[in-house]
Length: 315
Image 1 (cartoon, rainbow, N blue to C red):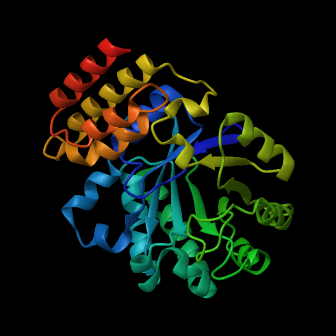
Image 2 (image 1 turned 180 degrees about the vertical axis):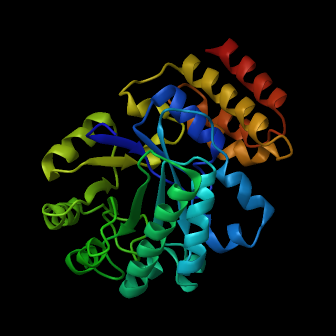
């Protein structure tokens, strides 16, 4: 990969295959992640989970993100990711969802540092075995996405623990579990992580409240990072990675293309899943709120076309 990295952060229920395709085509981020996938659900064969690991042919570095708390399932899931052609495996140790946390996954692993290291080592072993078995020659990265602590910042202790397992990357969201997505991300904590990793082979990525490409580059330089991941600012805005501000006409064009790609990837799925994405595209023009309200009722691509055609005629 080229550095510095400006990539698309993994987001539950958002960074599915159509979203990644659209972001890749129109934004060209340096790296994209799947939404997080349950290792246990994947290995036990729950059908809906398989579609979360669909991905398009691309030269963009694509990473499968997994969550759970059992090393044996991480081992097997990592091998599935290799078989599907992913370039890396990311371990979610930061999700603040209560149900995930209560089962010991996501940010719950912050309270189990020994288990966290065991999971990283299990994935490393799986990648080594899988590469040999599948005759994979490219480098497969192993990374962790996490937070700064549980109730308070514990960056030094927690990141030092992870560094002992030597992942290729640690992406640090500069909030605690308790904060979830509230308040401001404390980037000084990411700076602490970068300092800790200086004499290791692990690279640090920052995450939290990045507004645009220029802001990302400022943070990278200020905290001496390998890169940053952009999450919420990329919703309805794949152009953010190029630093482009699209016209309303361009937004509508890509919105419709996103719908068509959703149907292509998931022909049996209900288009209502796309409604949140449609709302994110529709902004910064007169009566945008009314258009968003109409789009929250759509059931087909034709419904979307009619609303956009009517709106464009009024602009």
